[in-house]
Image (cartoon, rainbow, N blue to C red; front, side, top):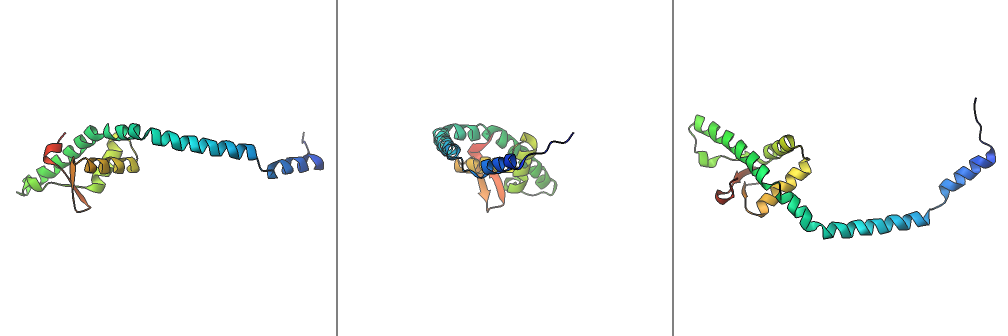
Length: 133
């Protein structure tokens, strides 16, 4: 059994689609303002979430640096020069802790801001002396 819409029903349906919904746009605007206010109020909460990743991230970095130190010992190099590529560290964070690359990058930047890690150029990362996990 097939149902057909009359021409007046089709016109009514099309005219409903074309009408702007002013009430809904106002609600959306108010909602976006409330969300922005909520984001600024929870800024310290977001910082706490990032800081809660410091210890797991430093533990991951320490494991990567330990592997690098073992490689340097094998070729009789100075283990104080052990450093990890930033991309390798970011990938390890994303893989081991199931987080996005953007979140991993934010954790790396935050660790740098609080002087827990040191950048060698823009490519390599080392743990600072006082910043070990």
